[in-house]
Structures are given as C-alpha cells and as structure tokens.
Length: 402
Image (cartoon, rainbow, N blue to C red; front, side, top):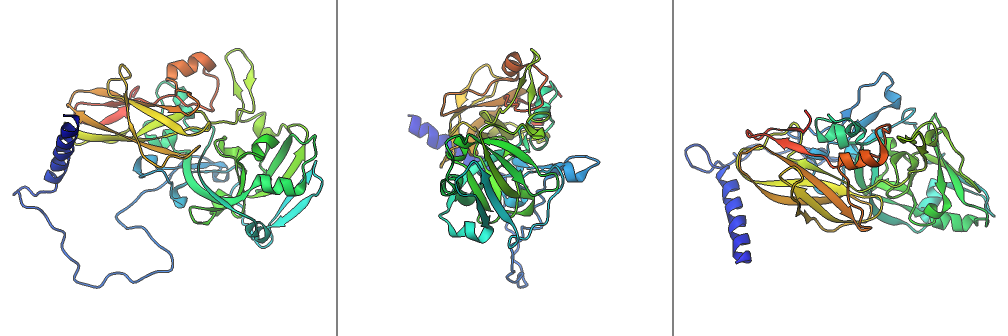
C-alpha cells in the first residue's frame, strides 16, 4: 500500500506540474525553434542572459572592508559557483603575482621553509568539499525581527570543492619541535589579516588551497593561496596566505580578541570559538518569495555543521509543534553543505515552516529561544538558531516576526 501511495503521489505531483505547461486553450505550448545560427564557441563560459543571480552587497562607506552575500535561495545542489561565493574583506583584495608570491613556514620548526606556488603544486594534492562561513553569518537573527530573506540573513556561507596540499605534509617536512602548539596564519592583504591556529587542527584536516571548483582560486577568495580549516569560522581560513609562524602559545591578534569574541550575559567572553555549530535553513519557499497556491510543493534547503556530517534534518509545517524527517541528498560530505527536501501539500491555510539539523555528533540545532537561554543576547557571532518562515494564505512568505 505504501509503495502504491508513493507512486500515486508522485504521479499526481507530476500531473499537476505538467498541467501548468498547458496554454489557456488546453494545447501544450512549444518554444519556437531558432531560424538563425546560434552563438559560436567562446574562450570562457558565460551564463544565460535570462539568469540574473547576483550577490547582495552590504551598504558601507568603506567597500574595501565590506562583504557580499551568496544568493542561497537561488542555487541548486550543494556547490556554490565560484563567482557567487560570499566575500568578506578587511582591507580590500590585493593584486598578487603567483610567480612572486611565497609561503614562509618558520618559528618552532627544525627546518624553516620558503615555498613558491609552483613548488606547492608539485606536491601530493587533495580535493575536498567544504563550506566556509563567516562567524557573523545570521548575526541579524539575534534580533527578534531577523533578516527578511535567506540571502541577507544566511548569505555569508558558501560551499566549494577545494584543491591543495595537506598542511600536515608541509609541517612534517618543516619538522615541528615538541613545544609547538600554535601557529600564526598571516595574509598578504594590506591589513595583514592574521589568526592563531592550533597545531592539532593544522595536522588534522587543514590544507593550503590553490584551486576552487576546478580552477584557480579567485582573487577575492585568496588567490593564489588560501588556508582552509574545514568547519571553522570564516576569517581563520586566512586568504592570500603568506606566512605560518609556529609557536608555543596563541598570538591573541586583534581579530581574535577585540573582534570575533562573544560577550556572554555573565560578563565573560567566549574566545577561540572556532567550530561552526550545526545549522539549517529552508531556502524554498523562503522570505520574500511566493508559492503558487494550494497543492503540492517541495520544501528545500541547506544544512551544515563544522563538527562533521549532517545526519538528519527535520521539517515542521506547523511552527515546530511536530517534526518529520526530510530526505537528504547524497553524497553527503563532512563539514559541507547538505541539501534536504521535503514534499508538502499546502492547504491554503496560513502556517509556519521551519527546519532543524542534527549532525553526526548528535548535536541538535537549537531554537532562537534555546540559544538565547544558553548564551544571552550580547553576541553578534555564531548564531545557529532555527529560522521559521510564515506562509500566508495567498502563498506569500515572510519572516515570522515581520
């Protein structure tokens, strides 16, 4: 009976979708075939002029210290196109010649190294799919009102296939001294963006990436070299990497003390909160979208966790009163986006839809109320609360508090 029901529902959904392709007279419309020859081959691909998907630029008086946000609600699957990967800079994008760029590894090592980009590319490489997320992503969700749409609320997160050299290989070649516990990762941008990185993480799954989604990393993503620390907050994945200084203690740079720390309700501050906790968001239907009325619709979204692989996503269509498991798209990677899907019969009655993720450690994404109870409201970082959307009777979707 269950299999027959699935077949029936699938056929009904397909029939409904095909019905929408018919003209008012009932005849199926066919696109006219072009009478002229099409555009010739080109040296570099372009998207269709009918597609107008762009990053949202934040309004700032200093564009060199600004950000742009990925349109997650307009993307498919789990890979973010390189041209749409979010940006966050502190002093603009430097112009670096890969032939002149060098990576220095020094400090508490037996054999200091100075490596060219060409020399790094000669070494054994790996390719892995991982997300990168700014720790300030969803910072607006600390407010009851939150962001009106997915892009402005969740767009400081993207997922790519990164290719490069395992950092453990380079540190083994340099020869870590026994007292080596931390290292300073420094970029070649004008502000010399730098963060303290535990050697334990560096030896685990870190890499020095020179390629993204099959081609060289783009300048705004760190060309020619970027440090990738899977699952950890965005700015510790230092772009335009030029130096790794190994030491026995953290360096307490400005971007891990006066910034990127979190004041708690008791007056104490959280520091070195590297991992990005499990998070999910429904991207369709979502804020400022409108669905086509009662009937079958697919709820779709993204989930990710800096702790590992997403194991389960649940969806509620009644504001969190009841939850049902969503389908997870395979393959699923550790510390990467996971696409989830959920079939939904919209009755035309106003409701609230929301998702929550569970990662392989068993961690469950909290509600906003649960997160505030644990950490207060003084922070602007690491908000991973669930995001509810209100679907009105006419199919329009808004933020719950709007």
